[in-house]
Image 1 (tube, rainbow, N blue to C red):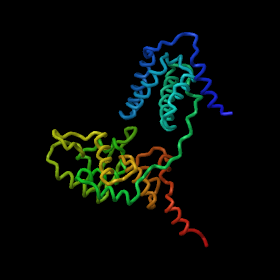
Image 2 (image 1 turned 90 degrees about the vertical axis):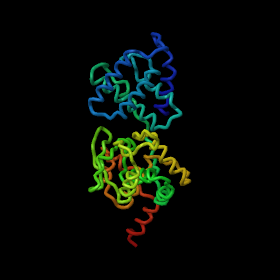
Image 3 (image 1 turned 30 degrees about the horizontal axis):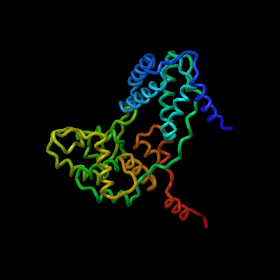
Image 4 (image 1 turned 120 degrees about the horizontal axis):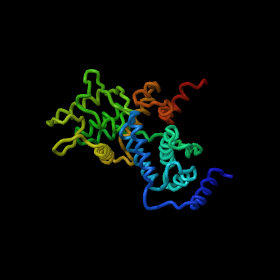
Length: 308
């Protein structure tokens, strides 16, 4: 018998019965108030604005579905809520649960509620999928089909540094140390780290910057005037445009270039601890996912090290 599945189905049935009626037309003000306090607390802990915005959105969606006081919310309420997202991937449901666990754990620690309703809910098993990195051939295709200096600079900088989209978005011209061929970026948890450029990335970045006549401090800016910092969405569109020009069928976005940096570098013999530091991963297991060897690499290692 599938116990968890049975629990979810029973929760769905019994959630329709309450001693007191729950109003359906408004979010309970207590839940709204506790959400504001929670986000304020996390902001003081140094969480990034991107993370805070993500928490805010998830908790707003939750409050629109579960219109109760925080101390009246039960484990069944949370299970029923998560069960409504059958169309989502397990990773998305796991993220929703993670936010709720953080929220209710904080409420319990601060003694706003006596019991954490998410404590008994186990996160779904993670889907074991390798990051969709580009091959060396695909990377070269992207390079070949860049039509502007900005496009080539985007591609080379994102691949060479392995930076996240938000980290590239926030870079300024003054952040670049041309002598050391590096720069410092602010990553998750407001943590600063050093990342490095390749000779190729530095060459194309300089080439792009020499074409600019504006006084905007941002490293990457819009083509339309007045020039301003290019948005995250703008960077995503530009990377997608390059992939379209190259005729690649697989989806290519900024995070794919980060995957490509990690995968190709590790397969070329880099130390995984160094890659962890370069990517800004706090948990080594996050970096370990990139250490999965390609079929070609496994075959090569077998031929090289098998004792005949």
